[in-house]
Image 1 (tube, rainbow, N blue to C red):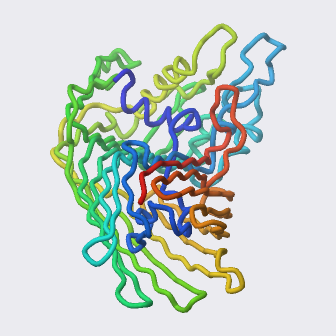
Image 2: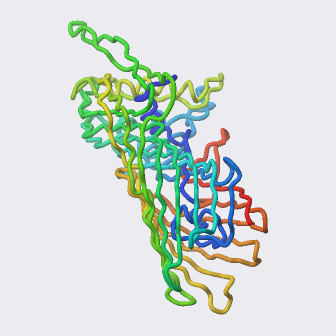
Image 3: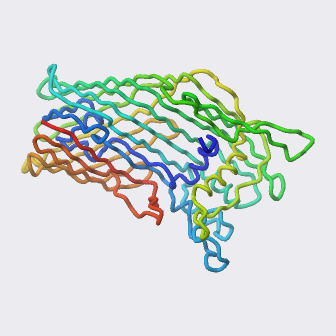
Length: 469
């Protein structure tokens, strides 16, 4: 690995809009009756069609949720064309006022959360008195939670004490094998469950707790707090280097400057379960509820790093431009930011602490659907989704209008309000006999930068293809 873990976690946090994507299951399709993958959002849902997904193309979800993004971190350089500098700069540029620089950040926690899911293979079929599913998927999730005071300190709005609070960054990746079954209990109630076997690939968590910055001199700060980084991944090790204290009388110390992965493989094993139910009140009204991903992964190792001391000296963050007229790349800028972050988090290798157990983030879905009596091809739906995942917990409410104009065509449009923003979504599901194709978004894409990076940290895209009969 080129960059060290503690460089990546916070450098990526401060410039998260430059990387990563978020995906969840396509909530826009929750009430699309012939959408093959409704069982991923509620295992009680069955399907009129049997299907086998196209390998690696059956169900791809990519997107992002957050309350800050690229456009809040990367701004136009007010001195461009005057001093011949770069066109784009960061919010830390001294020529940008503090009020303008910090305007895009929430005064609470600034968060970005995401999941990337790729269905490697999936099948659904009627048998055993109900509907059955077998799914093999690759899933990756990440989250970052940064207090407003961290950006205020990076901007250095004044010579004062900054009570920054807690900094959280985490990511995990695993492969999931799911076996599901749903069945009709009576003419009103349908229930379902799914058992999942989890093969852990990697998990990384960073917590810098109770962070505080006190001014020591004009260009030095005393940083206090407890930092811990835990990485569970087969073959992962930290690499350290010897550095000298600013005060020569203190001698030398070891600090992490890179990391290696020697080989690859399964780093952990776990299990999870999905439970769901659908209850038909009458011909017009149906209610539903599901709890997803109740489970854990037990990792075989825990490569831990901790800060060298509860208090240490830091020179402060310095502005770097993102786009250079002379060919410097964003990677170069991130490496430079990473060097500053290395000093800020101040980590040393604490060795392998043995195994550890982590959750995978549970989701609760509760909803209701109304079938228009005068035109049965249209339904209206309401869905509440809550992702329970510690510092990265979020909730969303979504209302939808769903239409089935033809026996082989359905879809809909919807509107959502969540912990980060409001959004419009849509889905189109084409399913003639022998084939199924769907595409949709829970959040319609907005403007992008010239580099193709979404200016907002909210984006979504899902699509997939299956053979159906």
